[in-house]
Structure formats: structure tokens, C-alpha cells
Length: 270
Image (cartoon, rainbow, N blue to C red; front, side, top):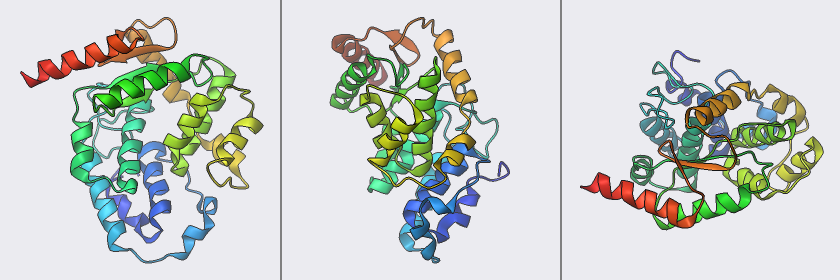
């Protein structure tokens, strides 16, 4: 799969657009994770490649093929055929998910690229189970949205078993094509964080396959947790939630976030 991940997109074109989305996510993010067709069996009926599917594949390839990981490691996105590629980075995964979900929603390629080329990337370091994450996430999304900035990434360090369960559920949702919806639900969720409750949470927004436990167990998050913890340490983060903008810690207030973004945009425009 490493030999040419992006050209492999054409292999999956015979499935419906929704299943195609799942497949591309698996290629870019999970690389070796088996793709269970039984998750959405109704998708198996379509055997022909439509013009819309071809355009989707070409657009995804055009946007993702040569992009560097937004964690600023200097490497290519996770799963890229271009080497060296970043591995396990939630910032890189978020970039891929944003592109695929935006394409599926009908957003034009030019608009997606324009958003990705923004000089602003906001990271929020906190677990889903952190009692303050919902408030901080909502504030950051509100301010960034008002300033037309879309690159906001949650970087959960997975400090507890409960937090790690939530991360696995979020990554399962990424694989099934509903990452943004499930992520928002997890952020708003106040517990408990046992498997049954989390799976029931997903069931409110998505069809649950019979073998969901098998699929979840196949999702490995150790590298992602290690990378997010590493980045937190490099940025001097000692408590959560913590916000960084372009890797620099910023106070978690509306005014501080707004001023930091506006300053960077002003400097880039000169």
C-alpha cells in the first residue's frame, strides 16, 4: 500500500461514493487496516464508476497528494506515497478528514485548498473526557469561524483509560466517514465513558455493524497518543485544556485567540 497509496484510490471507485469515502480514509489514515465491506452492505450493490466518483477521486488526489503534515514536522501527510510521511499524527488525520468530508459535502476544490493554505492552525490539547473541553472547543470554533479559519484540531493526549476509549471511538467514526459529527458528540458528552455508552452514542448518528468490537480493536491509537503527547511536551504544555496557535501557547480567552489570529493574518498580508 505504501508503494502508491494515491493511485490505489481508483481501485475503490467501483463502490458507492459513501463507501468510497470510507475506503480513502482507510488508505490515507490506517494504511493496513482491513476494510470491512459489511459495515454498509448496501454499498456493495453498485459496481460501476460514475463521473461523480471519478471527480471525487481526482479532487482528493489533487489536494492531498503533495501536502505536508500540518503538525509542521516537515513530512508528508500520514499514509502518503511521498516519503518521508508523518505517522500517527492527529493533526494530519484531521487534515485528511477535512478534505474528504468537504468534498463529500460538495465544497469546491479551490475553496478547500484556500482553507488549507491558511497560515493559521489551532490545536486544542485536551481529552474528550476533560470537563472543560466543551466550553473551550465551542469558544475556539466560534472565534475561528468568525475569522474564517477552519484548521482547528483536537489533540487528545489519552491520559486515562476512559479518554483512550473515546479516542478509539472517534477514530472508528473517522473510518466510517462520520468523524466530525461523532467528534462533536463526544466533546459534548459528559460521561460515563464505558464502551456500551460510547457505542450507543455512535448509534445515535450512524449504523452500528455487528462486529463493531472487532473493528474497534483493529484501530491502533498508540502512535497517535504518543505523537500528541510529544507535541504537548515540546510546547511546554503541563495542563489541559491548552490552546496553541501555530505551536505557540495562547490563553483560553476569546480576546487572546482573536488577537493572535488577527496579528498573524496582518503580518502575512504585509
